[in-house]
Amino acid sequence: MPSLTSVLGVLDPTSDRAVFRQIADALREAIDKGRFREGDKLPSETELVEHFAVSRMTVRNSLSILQQEGLVVSEHGKGVFVRPRPPVRRLASDRFARRHRDQGKAAFTVEAEAAGSRPEVDGLEVKEERPSPDISARLGSPRKVLARRRRYLLDGHPVEFATSYLPLDLARNTPIAQPNPGPGGIYARLEELGHRLDHFDEEIRARMPSPAEVRTLQLASGVPVISLIRTAFDSEGRAVEVCDTVMAADAYVLAYQLPAT
Amino acid sequence: MPSLTSVLGVLDPTSDRAVFRQIADALREAIDKGRFREGDKLPSETELVEHFAVSRMTVRNSLSILQQEGLVVSEHGKGVFVRPRPPVRRLASDRFARRHRDQGKAAFTVEAEAAGSRPEVDGLEVKEERPSPDISARLGSPRKVLARRRRYLLDGHPVEFATSYLPLDLARNTPIAQPNPGPGGIYARLEELGHRLDHFDEEIRARMPSPAEVRTLQLASGVPVISLIRTAFDSEGRAVEVCDTVMAADAYVLAYQLPAT
DNA sequence: AAGTGGTCTAGACCACTAT
DNA sequence: TAGTGGTCTAGACCACTTC
Figure 1 (cartoon, helix red, strand yellow):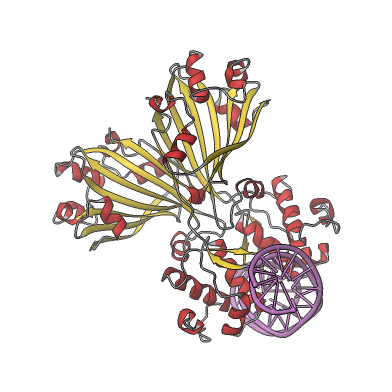
Figure 2: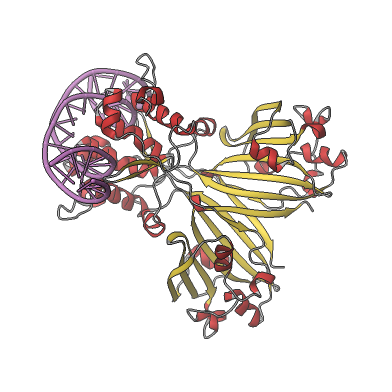
């Protein structure tokens, strides 16, 4: 077992850089160099206090930097660990192609099982609501909308939650208003209702999560969310659905293919 | 000027929620409700200490939460301010369409000027390198690559930096290896060299920035980065370029249009 | 019981900004 | 000079995990 000095080095008292930043730098470098690997436990706060001869608050300050960077996670009573990279779910840009829809299974389920993960959906909720100004504008200002909310989990870990909004005049008293809309999901039902889907617009943003999102997605600190707002248009150019999705950024890579035209 | 109590309320001593979280909640709620607007100064640490009757470290702890959430920024000697939302640059999925390329101006410049912003590019660097394993794999394992790095700024603020990699056997001794590759950029030159572009693959991730990225993009804390890796394929299916882009997430929204097929 | 991280105090000195 | 945030100390008590 190598000494802490050989792994972390020592402070440079002549440096202008704050002590807690120097300690964070030392730990970050050790992680980058593989001296601590994914899932490894870092030295305890007490050990770091003794090694660097600083107060505990200084050490905690250093660790909080690494936590903000998403490099480590702390577990109460256990220690601070190098954050393991969760398996990444790849969202391909053809995921809503009609050929997938025709198989009758939900896209999320199909993809997850293909990747060897156990998919779950929970918190399903279907309600009639008055739309927010943003959703309203995207849907052509309907008075009310049908909102379908749900959360997606992989192997028991929440990775995404989403709300679909549809103009109420379009969705009311159709299978779309049922908890389970049937094979192929709501896009299949929309087409049966005569709304042949033409294209989707997607808007992607990234930001830090709100406290509510941290709870819903059980996010570690230092993990941003990806916000994806998709609007579905039928062949007459009408916006027939807006889906607002929030994803744990460490669980996703989005893939798009663009023609060079 | 309303009292701090009316704006922030008081602590609930019976709550299980940690005091510093309660204070953060109170400040967050006040911001959400518009009691503090973008650019407004929050009460100073001293004022918060007096109002809530807690120690300064507790107040600082609360403020650091809001900073991690990207809600506020602190300025040494001045105060803590509600973070102003920078203007957002929208990247449309047709930004590499040939019709844009034919106009002869760089896409970044055209878009920025259309949006009323002043575009700049700095730090241009063109080098021959040995590719990283990831880049190498994407480009079909060339021995060496040409790397073109640059940083983009809007109105003086860095928003993005990018590196283009091209197989060296393809780019050496061509205008692509020049600092200024000429009108239409390297994609126009690639087509002149006989590589008719067929399509682009884009991979999008979001994560917290490294310290180097914080410096390069002058990121406030609580601002993630969007990583976009684009691979350009010619009509023979060869990967002719990989562009690795890191964007300040608060400055961008990415827009894609997908056919329903 | 021992070790870990989580919360909190009551100070201190410093660096930066405003006036 | 006064006010602000930035850094740091040396404790204290608590909650959680492991044994």
